[in-house]
Length: 138
Image (cartoon, rainbow, N blue to C red; front, side, top):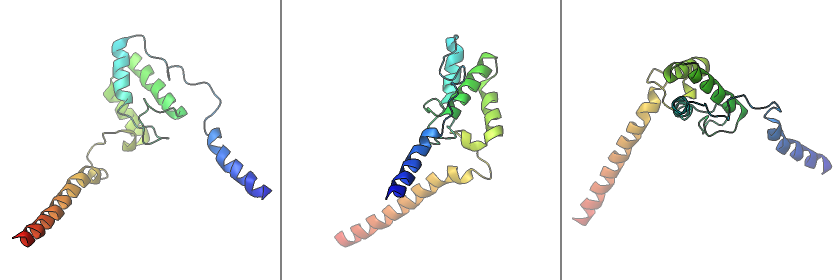
């Protein structure tokens, strides 16, 4: 029984050790002085997916990696780089997954086609259901 409790405690305590004890990156949680640059940085941050959380943008995530990515975006925007070039660099480094708006290519076309396909199947099923219902009523 004692071993089981120790095992459970270790399993539950592991996520608490996921982040390091290092301080956050310099611009991770500090806005840029220029409001126009900060607006560009924020807009880009909402387009980029946190690679740790995967369901949140780097703007919303508290993960350490998301903070590092926010700092990187702010540093590059402050240096005069365009949001598009920063986004392209991050996609080249981390893959299309980092973007909430992946390009249509051989790997991502199912992401773009699936909603249309599912709508078509749903319409076809609903049409068949309504035909049967109208046939019985008449």
